[in-house]
Length: 288
Length: 310
Image (cartoon, rainbow over all chains, first blue to last red):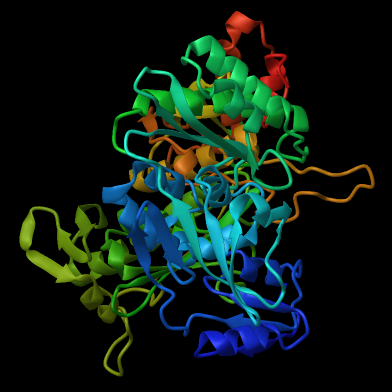
């Protein structure tokens, strides 16, 4: 199939881009096009205007400052993967599960985050690392915290006239451990279900801070709050981690589809939460 | 065990041009399995000319009017035998012309790599093109033989040839997630005489990949209103290189007595066994749980179901 007819704009400044989005009609932002273009081809999306942001200046930077990692809207997933190769095993592991290298060469980090596929890895990482989306609209710039960003499958708090210019991840503190796991039918497919965890331990060995997020387990990425609370301040034992993982998974309301039943997703969410928390604990004190 | 290469026939026309190069035409069209190479090898061996002198034409009714087609692992046996026999007849014509030109007994004529010679007389070596030119009539005299270096043979194959193979799958089953990963995949098979080992390996690799799809991934799913739910390759999952281990092969060559080449069909064998091999491997891995595998594809949700967890 071919896309339905649409207008195309290629603004040169941020103001022009926001103006185009605010001009009325059903506009969509085109960056890497790795999700949008297939949806156009399948006519699952039928925007009247595409705003191509690839010519906008100043959106291609990866900046690390005071514990935050800011990624501009034109940073390709592959660029972040290259950055992560020497800086962050967590980001490196997550990104290797995002589709395949040819797709990561074009697909953007911000595009993936705002596309809001519930089974996608980066939105769950953003949630786990308590990141924010930087949105620019006609009324200026605002920060949208990840836990208020995702509303439903492919639906976010971003207004139709707003452009996500960057995302900011809070980098795990020194000594934090991390774990990441997913089940997909094939390498590079969207996950049936997945989990990512980051934990820190206090001086007395108890768990100080626990962050757990799931993807593919609900209509949006979700924090495993029940599991986080069950472990915070506790001495980590295998039994406690297992209980916390099951508590976190019990709070999920996944959907079933042709690739996995809802029961499967909830069951495996618990398995993966236990594995990622255990891995994170084992990596405490190692490189992040 | 597979009955391969169903008949009833396939044909070939083999024709030399004045330079001694050959066109091999057959009704069995190539679908990507290397007919141009394998058929040229058969013709080159039977004609005694270099491989690169041969052009293979498939499925052109202007070149050969009758044919059946490529399916049922049949082309090497049916078309290959026709090409072998037709090439042999053209070679007989080369030998007849060369015997007349070189004034030797046909039984002493050798044709090799496009050069014709009398056995035991290296000085007699003559390019094939020269022999063919000698058959061309001139105003002074007729040719040394009929100016006819062409033959058509339709090989009759009353039934099938029997190919056999054993497939071994070694799998890891994650009992926490139901994921199945192929660790090793081995194929020991007998397709009779192997014409081209690389092409035979390729046939097996491609077939196994398709079979792995049936074992682990590929499924046509419909909803209650009979709407197809796997209508794109986002949902109908075919295996990629990432899902396949290196496929290890063992070739056992027991020539078929049913055709002059001794070949048996190989095209489909790779795809037949993987679902059963994988299902048995998964069942074996899950023996402690008493799991019984009765269907494929074995997606993770299905496997956890076998464990009573999903």
